[in-house]
Amino acid sequence: MQIEEIMKKMIDLAAGNHHDINHFMKVHSFARTIGRMEGLDEETQYVLEAAAIVHDIACPLCREKYGNTAGALQEAESEPLVREFFSGTNLPEKQLERIVFLVTHHHTYTGVDGMDYQILLEADYLVNADESHYPGKGIALFRKNVFRTASGLALLNSVFCEELRGMP
Image 1 (tube, rainbow, N blue to C red):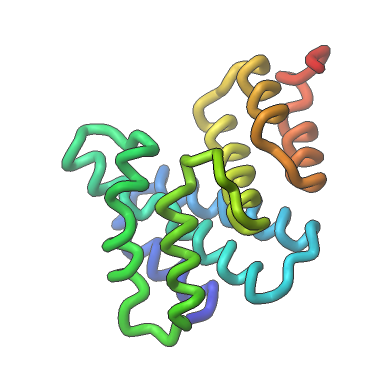
Image 2: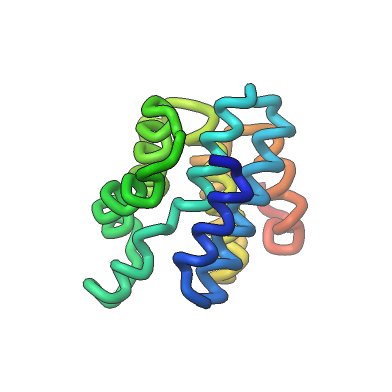
C-alpha cells in the first residue's frame, strides 16, 4: 500500500473531522522530514510514515467511549483498529507488526527501541505542542528528556524559538 493510499484512506476514515485530518497530516509531514534528514533506510521510512498517518486512529473511538483521547486510552484501543485498517492490503507482516507497535506506544516515552519510534514521538510532540500551546518551560523539559535526533531538535528549536528564548 502506497503512502498516498494510506493518507487517502485515513482522510476518508476521519469523516470530515478537520482537526484530526490536519493533525495526522502535520505529524506525517514532520515525521517524513525528520526521517529523511536522519537518513532512514526506505523500509524504516515507510513504516514511520505509515505509523505517523494512523497514529491517532483510536481518537474517534476514545471520544465516543471515554469522552476524551488520553494517550493511554489511544494506545489501549488502537491495535485492532490498525489491523483492520491494513487488512486486505499487501503490507508485509513484519511492517504491519511494527506499525501496530508504534501506534500502540506513541505516548510511551520509555523503552524507545528504534529511530522510527523516536521520530514518531518527536513529530507528534511538535504538532501537539503547537496545537495545545504548550508553555516554553514544558517544551524545554520535553526537549531535554525526550528529543534525541539532531533533526528533531533543530526543528523544535526553530518552531518554538520564541517559547524557548532564554531557556537552557
